[in-house]
Length: 321
Image 1 (cartoon, rainbow, N blue to C red):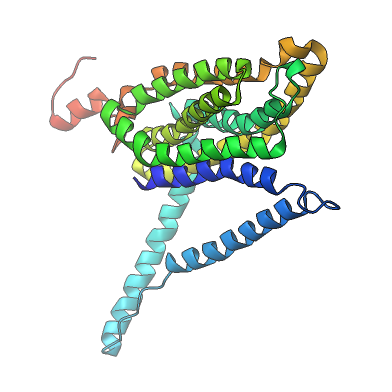
Image 2 (image 1 turned 30 degrees about the horizontal axis):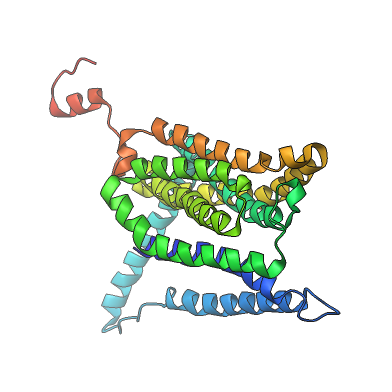
């Protein structure tokens, strides 16, 4: 439930944030972007303060027990030195192991999935507002900033509801792989239909469905990452995965804004749906990758699969493979 609440807050605010920006843009006539910028700056400072308090809460030192005698203290010192030596050895082994984690199947494919889902999600956040404010002659809806803000806010409220209740229920009911394929199909279909919406109401419904389906891929890919890695390697695997996803999130908006402008310049109305077709292609790629994942991805693995020869040797039996 906790990851679902985190995604609910994150995805909801990622859509409500631009809505607030649209509502407050132009309030100060001389500096139209001043108020939205100040709001963003204030929220950033608040997040930093909250992080400081959370960081302190998770890094409290355990109270030290009083030393009763010199002999006890000496024993504790010896134990501390042994623990320190063991910790150093374990650190070296962890560093050596982490070098091979990203090349252990299916981690490489999951890293590609995380990059693609991060790219597609943030590309959608950029492409949809550009399409909404475009003139109807080039396939847009010619909406102003405040109308765009209201549409995104409605989608944000839906995402909060969806990730809090619907996603956890459906994931438990149908399984992560099945539900990932389902949401990817929904995302692909709605992404293709979205640029051909003739009314704001239809566009809003298609957008909120498409947005929640795309962000669902991020949440489910996180579960795939944890289930694909062994318990000792999950920190390393998640570190690479988050980095890959972040790179995708950084490239997506830049790439899609450029592609959208280029397609309108060269093809006009006929090119206004290109970026949405690319979004659909990313969802199709997600389907193919999920179907290619090993079976243990559904529930995770507590230990690496063992070689049948090793099992037979350990049990004193001969196993033909």
